[in-house]
Length: 438
Image (tube, rainbow, N blue to C red; front, side, top):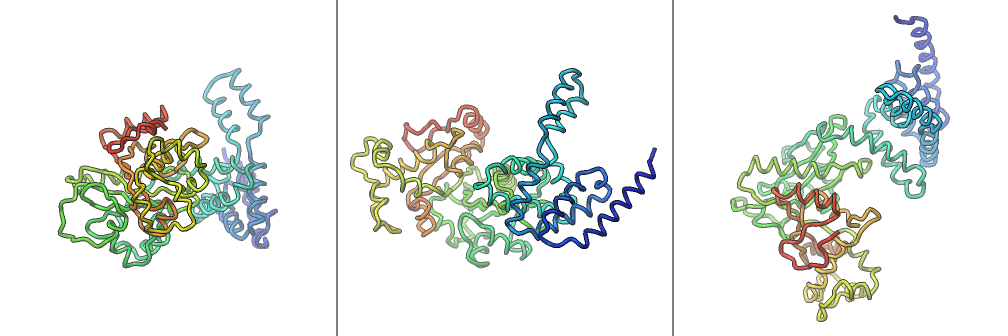
């Protein structure tokens, strides 16, 4: 039965609270924490949308200093209680059933995730919480104690941005101007200078796809750009040139750019789903396209090589006695330096070592692009010198790029070998036996 006294009391209490909210000053840390307490309490549930709206509005008014204090406060205040977890474990041990298991799960989760779930009820709540995580990411490096708060947000985002909830859209010149403008802004790999350059990337020999989320209207989440080519593309500059649209002998889809648009969704895996979905879409539209691969950048290679000791360079190069790579560290090195071609084998071997053998603390390739594609089940098909003869390409990796090949029949097998055994599949064109194992 309904307890009308409790309902009336709750309404009156909420009304008083809403009246007082009008008098809250912007950048008020004490008030936002008080509202958070109300939101996750029983009395706040009836007016959750209103309270959530006030929290999100107040959060956006916080100064950077108060945002940091807000993160620290909710991280500590709403974390799991070890005492309650121990009690729940004891109850479950005594009586193992679905209720005690559910209670254990609930107390072990704490209240941070529930706070964000309820904040998401606010108008535009999803977008604000994504922006909130972007703020959090900026300060994580100097505030390691907030890593669990970040993990809670990532856990929620994996559910909220599950590919089943996302809509794949083919981007064309007829797409909304507002979306096209954001695509120019969000391109992370190869800058789009203006609408004319974007129009080229939307030509008949191109395919452009993006994921969208229903809660983020006209906001691309992640997008991928594809060139239809004869064999895998070997030069970004060639891919960007206008081509004869009458050419119909394409047999390959070369993925040359994939960009995460929302910083707040970093490390929330979406790209692997997007690539596999786009492969399916292209197969449906263009059944004569049989080969799928990438022309990918190598961010970080030049920085890594700059600090590489000469002894290690010699060990990597092995018996390439007539090849030199030390010149890459010289002060007079410039874009288009002829020594790059003359020492192509040495550079190729160094790149191959970097993208496969240099590991992070988890034993996986330190290069995030390599980690992404190998983890998706691709193989390293080729390493291409002078594939990007731009200042950006030269700064990243002396102009070197990588072809990753997606052999459709072997993708799952390659993925399992990589994830279960930390091994990358051997190259198809390169004979570099020392770099096959991750």
